[in-house]
Length: 113
Length: 111
Image: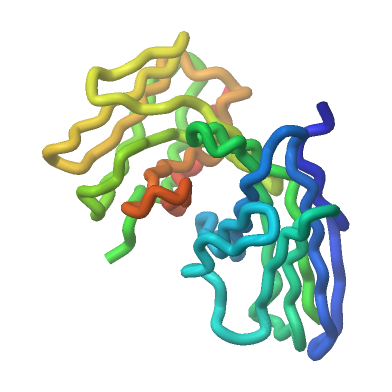
């Protein structure tokens, strides 16, 4: 049981480039959540997905950010035209949906230069 | 007003001390409550769930007061390894499993 796998662990992008963050949930988990943690702040909910469906995207910025969880493969959080303010740790969590038994991945630290 | 409010600290305590953290939340419709622990630059990990009846796990005791919308965590006999940031977490009002995190309270246990 490999747990929730996120990659890359660290990602450096220049302003204006695209960032793609990947998350493979725990085996048997079909619910994926993305959170963002800015420096010196708590985690902020971004989006909740099940396979091929976005259930709640109330925390996603209206522009440049998108997420998907295809039938096959990992969940992807995509940030287009990155800006310095996107620099943060992005955590993915998965659950079976039966309770709030989340498992978090180790996160992707995005640095925009 | 933040949905979950915590004193960021830091709390600096000697080994063996008892320390208490408090947290308030704004959404009376929240159903589930947790304390998570986050070590520096690591992912948050569930420390314990919080129930109105209070619950204890070894040196850790958590308490929920729904009327006051107040959650507490008590750590007895602090260890150096308890040094971390403690996150107060509540569920959102919709039944989607979304978690609302507080900013966290930093604890530093000194020898």
